[in-house]
Length: 300
Ligand SMILES: [Zn+2]
Image (cartoon, rainbow, N blue to C red):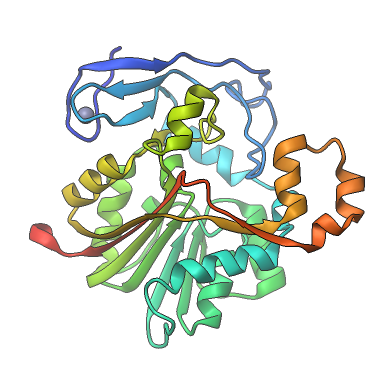
């Protein structure tokens, strides 16, 4: 494998799971549908590789950063708008690990999508900022939520001064970056000293990931990097953060949402009209890790 590990620089890279082909579209040759959907992955999942030195696991993707970004710019997903209240509750539970009160603090959500975490943060008193490449999601925020300070684009193009934010969150985002190290370096620069970074991402070191291997539900074309607690901690430390907390975290959704995961969309009219769409259920499979770090250490 002719790849270099972004974590340790080693070129001792081996194949973990071979490429899995699916139907492709004409617009995006590496995708099967015309635009990105949060709730439905698409396209060719390339080889999953593993660094033999540090154990970092990543997808062998040869796309340019701009090609990956274009895919998210066109992203839209009406299905994601369901479960809004539960999603805000999930975000609030995460933010409450920092503090119950965000008054007087600036929070930036990178990849804020339709503004779910920002809703939770606003209710907790934070001064909120968001970055999101999807035009559809930003239009949704503008029309429905009326939040100011939403930048439609990528973190790498975001115009902001250094040492500006108290908290920066990345919910289900870091695994999509073509270069997580570069993005963490930017975050380090724009966080205030002692500012917090909060990351939610699939945990490839989890029991579920080890049991299901290449069939683990988080192994999809859009996920380019697969961190374990060990590799994410190492990358955070290399980019100037001190890791304060690593834990697994579950999510609350109505039973109908979990039912779709099991039976697919086939029974949608039945499930939607049933009592399942009204009963919330919290599930923690242990395969989603939440990491809280602070800007500190020798690079701060
Ligand atoms: Zn490595």
